[in-house]
Amino acid sequence: MGDSAYSFSLTTFSRTGKLLQIEYALNAVANGRTALGIAATDGVVIATDKKFGSSLVDGEDVKKVEKVTDGSGFVYAGVGPDYRVLVRKARKQAQSYYREYHETKPISQIVKSTASLMQEYTQSGGVRPFGVSLLVAGMDGDGVPRLFQVDPSGAYFGWKATAIGKGYVNAKNFLEKRYQEDMELEDAIHTALLTLREGFEGEMNGNNIEVGVVSKSDGKFRLLSPSEIQDYLDEAN
Image 1 (cartoon, helix red, strand yellow):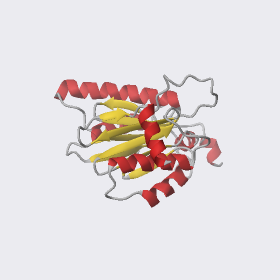
Image 2 (image 1 turned 90 degrees about the horizontal axis):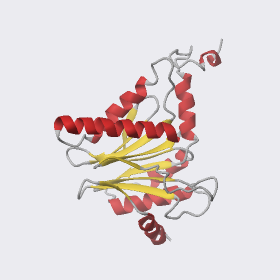
Image 3 (image 1 turned 135 degrees about the vertical axis):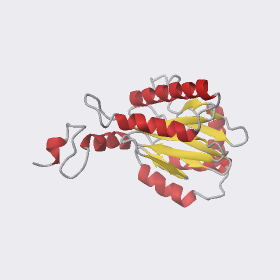
């Protein structure tokens, strides 16, 4: 009996020690739009494309980069509705933390609680894993810019720069060549857009790219406006 006999069971290991539903969730991530993040010396940038299958789609209400607390934000690759659930729960937990401790929830705690939630969905009957990987950007309590990745298994990693979704291998290779330890936020934004352009089909503009940044100067996470993104793209040209 091969691994296929275990492919519909979330809570049963296969003979080779795999939980196949988690591997299938990672396949959903790999089929999603490319998203990437870069931690610079003075901030963090996360970016993704939000190109639609039809020009008739009204993309105003479609948000792929989301603010979670004043100083942190998420971007994802994978299944959009699953992402909305994780964002809502992360915001709710952050508000509970603020009510109890009267301070903003640190990014490390946001990552751990989100990863714990995702892990619960790999060990319970009647549920399935979340079909998303997250990139989480923010500032640590000591003011150090941090970038984390959280996978459907509940595993999480800290990165200097990384990419998820379709074309992540080529994007990572590009980042490895361009990343520098002393990179500043402005350079990181340019590098993020250049990396996205490598695998982008069609013309990039301020409306089909989303970029979120958190700067060390004020510790605030914000989304760049389409006009700001277009200015960066024009500079790159």
